[in-house]
Structure formats: structure tokens, C-alpha cells
Length: 255
Figure 1 (cartoon, helix red, strand yellow):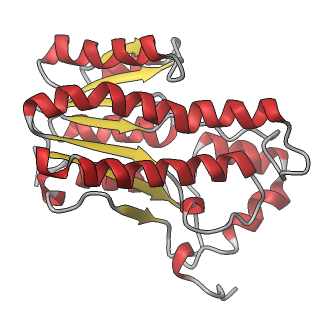
Figure 2 (tube, rainbow, N blue to C red):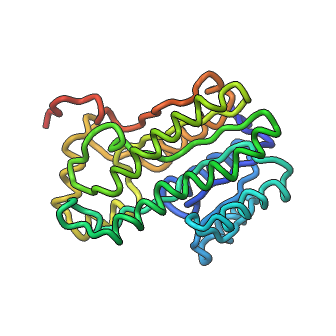
């Protein structure tokens, strides 16, 4: 099957690497016009050119930048049909609550949670006017269970994304807008590879709990994004959409 989002307009934040980049390519391959919001000015135009899309530099913590990103999609392509609010960070200074300072806590909350609030707030007026749309917010498996490696602000921020997505999914369901929280397990992204390089023991503790015995590839998460963006998921909203290799369902993982 091809053309599953043919002619639709998708906005993807954090679209220059990892899950975001894989999703940009997957959505474009299925016919979407893609608008990429990121702060990577070196890669952004190149990514946009590769998918015949549009790049706009966007600080997702800045309300004006976020509003301009979605306005760009509307002006360039005529609608806003899909919002994949994916930008996020997981810095090393976000660790145990005993060692994570307030500045680190606030920075992660701003990028991971407040940005999703801003993106939803910007996307919804377009979708409500159209009476259709799919919002996909990147949460995490740590939104539904404790993390094996402490990252207190990250875990809290993703719990907030999950809760907000459920509320919005319920609130706007009868107005044609679906909102779902995508909850990946550990994914083989540059961020995870950097963790392996800097702290192999900490990174390995993540893998031991995954029943499938490996990390997800970004393309596997992008397939879930495509499903949630397409009409194939037309009866799914306010959902905790786990793509985690079984980690959230495991009591004890055999070695």
C-alpha cells in the first residue's frame, strides 16, 4: 500500500535526526508535504530538499517560532493535517532527583513538555477549522513505568506529554481531531549511541529489560507515526501507543 497520507501536510519537530528524520522520510514517501521544524540549520535545508519539503528554523520553546512554523505549513501547502510533535532532549545532567539541579529540570521540561503544549496550541486552530487532523506527541515508555536509569525530569516530562495527549484526544474527538501519545522504548538514535559511548554500563541497563533483546530502529517508530497519521487509525485517539519491544509488559526479562 502506498499513498497512505497522499496530499496531506505534516509538520514534524525535531525532524533532522533520529525518530524525527525517519518519520520525515516515511511520511514523504507516502505522499505527504512535510514541513520540518528544527534548530539544525546545517542539516535542515538538506533534509527538506531530499523530501521536496520545507525547513523552518524553530526553537520549540518559543511561542512565536512555533506559531510561525505552523503558519508556514498552512501558507505553503494550504492545510495542517498532521502534527508530529517530537522534539526533545535527554541531557546527562538530568539524573537522580538528588543530583539534578533546578536549571536542568526546567530546561528538560521546557523542551520536552512545554514545546508539545505550544505545538498543540498552534496546530489545533487549523485542524478545528478543517474538522480533521491527527496530532502525535512523542512521550516514552517511561511515561507508564519507572526508568531503569534515573532521568527525573525526562520521565516527568514524558508523563506530562502522555496525560496532556489523553486530555486533548478526549476534548477534540467529536470535532474531527485525533490526539495520541507515541511511547517508544529505547531507540537506536544518535542520542542513545552517544550514551553508549559515554557510559556503556548505564546504556546496557536499558537493553537488558527489552524482551525482544534489541533497541528499536528509528524506521520502526516512523512506521507507527505513519499509522497514527493515516486513516488506518481513524478510531484511535487519546491513546497510549506503546512501541517498546515488550518492555512495559515484562515482569522479568529472561537473559
